Amino acid sequence: MIRWRGTTYSLHPLLIMLLVLSAITGHLLELITLVIIVAVHEAGHVIAAKCFGWTIIDVKLLPFGGVAETEDGALSPSWQEIIVAAAGPLQNVFMIGLSLLFQYMGWWSEAWSNYFIEANLIIGGFNLLPIPPLDGGRIMQALCAYGLSYHFTLRLGAWVGIVGSSLLGLFALLPLLKHSAINMNLLVLGLFLLWTNIMECRHIPYRFFRFLVHRARRLREWEMRSHIGRPIVASSERGLVDIMQRFRRNSYHMIYVIDEHGRIQRVIPEQQLIDAFFQHWQDDSLSK
Image 1 (cartoon, rainbow, N blue to C red):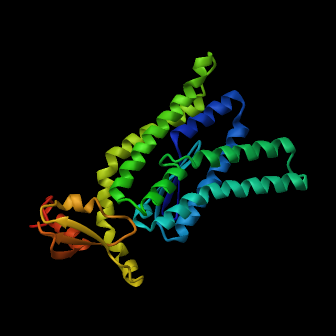
Image 2 (cartoon, rainbow, N blue to C red):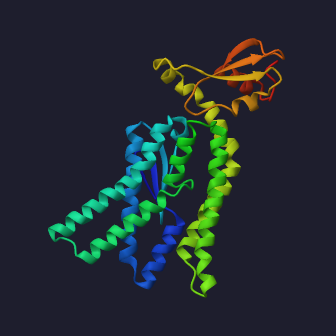
């Protein structure tokens, strides 16, 4: 574990286990190469996040990439999330280009260059699968946030992740139908992603809570852009939580409270709604 500039960098136990197994089986050099590729991949995320002023708390390296815990990810605009997520696979593209250059210059053999390129294609391609917390899953959620509520994108991401990781696990078991050996690496990754997304389902209330707490941080940004509030129309009997679950990540909301005849009774800014909820800690109706 290394701590540098407020960020903790560490190896996931799964990666440590693979390093030990590789040393025993004589494949340590290949795995060290993969670790370097994963580290450069993750460095792309960290550098991009730092450029946007995000706070990176913890970075864990896994066999397929890394997981970075940030304070700002879901609290920032979706376009920043997309750039940060895409920065990792772009590092793999850069390393492929570097490998071709080294081969052309005669510094690397064709066999080693091909291995390096293949490893980058596997790691970069795998990370683009639309399964959170992989890069493709983060990009999917960020894109969905443009048209769906933040709460719904959390649920959607977790369930897509559960289905996708389950399919990975089943795909790893397919060789059994032909009486062949299963793909153990893919099975382990599938099970790890399945467990991660099951835990993500349980953490949705916590993530949504943080989303509400930090909404005020973006008020200044929306004000400077002369952002037009997105309307939410609701009857006075609607609960606060039900309304807040409609909030979108990239929009500021004005809640139009209407009566049974469809006439507007009052207009409530979203921050007033959030403050009322945290003040009383009750899911009151808008009429209160």
